[in-house]
Length: 232
Image (tube, rainbow, N blue to C red; front, side, top):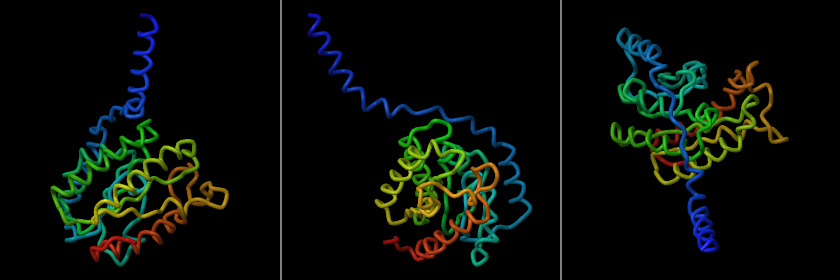
């Protein structure tokens, strides 16, 4: 009986192993951004926004990016809020995405998710949720995913970030309206690590040089997405 019991436990342990990597982390409280959302709404109530604009949404890498300066040829809206997870973007979807009816959406999020111990599978799940929300609201609107960046301060998390990026890249290849712009690879130098000068002092947020790298990669992807064709 003991041998039989041990065999049953052994079989169960192998059966449960795939589930271990699927344990998702609880999302942080999205209401920590209520004040930021109020600022967005207040600004929109006092100002007009361009029709069919290029919408940048996501975490602090979007918020700190002077997108109107880097993309002077485009009508842009910036709705980045620092510290955001993908779950936060999804929660505030109506206030940061749906209301603008953008012609194209660029999303950067997932950095804080992995820093918050979320596994790559959870990042992918939340990205799929975001895509579903856009599809329900604007079924023909292209989405460009800006992959999680390799950074100095979070270098120890890069393996999980890279895994999440790869999963999202593969998912983007399943739909013609989804684009994956590889801004991550050009941020790695010959030794496989990100150069210091791509970041400001904290080693996390981007310098002007870092944003120049992103802009160079993104411009042709934006142009292709606006034409409604997928990048080869």
